[in-house]
Image 1 (cartoon, one colour):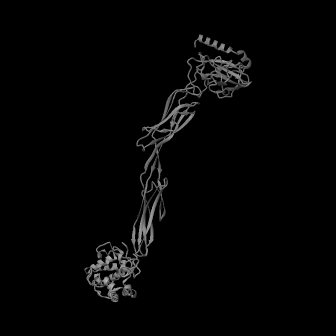
Image 2 (cartoon, rainbow, N blue to C red):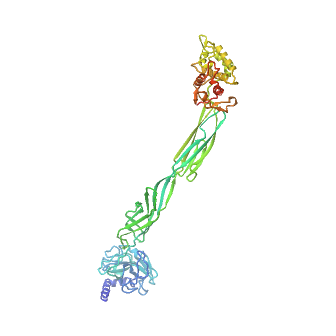
Image 3 (cartoon, rainbow, N blue to C red):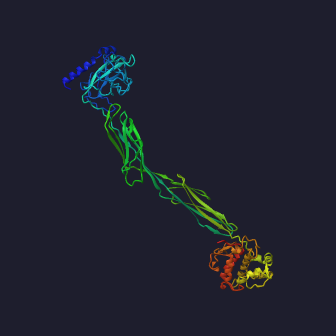
Length: 604
């Protein structure tokens, strides 16, 4: 500003102060003035103070400033200061210090009430001239100065403002003529106060589910045991196996923090997030957001199809439009971003453990990923052998996963078989009175015993008279059984006797033949016999078994009637030559019929 400009400006200020000056002086004692405050650090937004804050000198009586925030109310020395009391201040457009345009809030030329009420601009002064701040404006207690900012821009073409100081001794509103005024100017080409741009940071965490699938198997060392008496021990093996897991729900999650360093809100901000592979993330509340002063947190989530095979980075961005903040500062449009490098992914294992149990053995234990794979459990079960026929026993092993409750099971059924309950009787029975009585009481046709006729269909018994009475058949049976002998080069006689007893069992157990004369549950001729397991030592408890298939056409099994027919086919009439006189084969056939007669045979 040149000398001529300074003179004109000073004159203008003096002229403005003349309006109502006599009334003001009478109402408010002391003086008011503006000043700068070098060294004070303003935080909203930070102001780079320099020695040029006051453009026409320093300290009290400055009336030409670089920036609107440079203007402070001075406490002044005691001799010139305001008198003790409570006051408020307002910044006005020139011409607003009287009439309808006055310092009270809501008047047309009041520039302060755009931002706050008069109560936010209140202060008191004591007898020493010290100011006590009763409002919300910046106050420098060390230098006894109160900042006028914020206030709106003046409409005065010369950039002139008026500071009004009014006493509240008589309440509010005040009479403008009772206030005191001081004029000041902001340099031409006024400096626009800039709002501070926000900054952005974030964290980032990768997560994924790994769902494990489990399978279970159950084995047993034997599924079928045929035994006479006693008990059987079964040894079970259970194996629980898991796969390598199935990856799902791969995502990156975290929190984006946008710092607004201003004391006022920033509006219309957009917060976005993206991964370095191009994946666009979802930011909760990130569209057209309002950023309050301080930290503003936004949660986000990025969904992926699979675990990344290369390093993955995560960049968050905040953008905002140009805007004036509530304090009058201008925030330029802009953006800021932050990149989180090399995201690490944490596994969330699902169903990594299972509980294993068994229907017989009970709880077997817990198995988890990291244990032996497969994990093996073993146990034994002792089962008594039934006296007759078979009994099945089911055992089921089951796993249940700890997280989803998925289950799986595996079963094994073992069968324990005692001999078949045939109701067959030994050759000793048919030789004694009971057996002989059944034969003798048998039916006859034209005087010929039917049982004799039936027996003669088999070659070994064709030495029985074709006209034999039932008494003669009984005698024939007695003689054959008495002659039974296993010594010598052959076993024909013993084989013949055992086969005869079996034939009588078949005949007298079948209602269609000789009637149901013995206590057999069903016709014995139809009972199938396992020819691979025939008791060899019946008198010794049946602990030794043999395979007799070679004596019966190498068949795995035959019905009793089929066995009779086949054995008969290997004999001459009368049974004196059998199986080519091979004693070992004769013995196999004999043992088979002996086992049938003693109910020591098994079902196939």
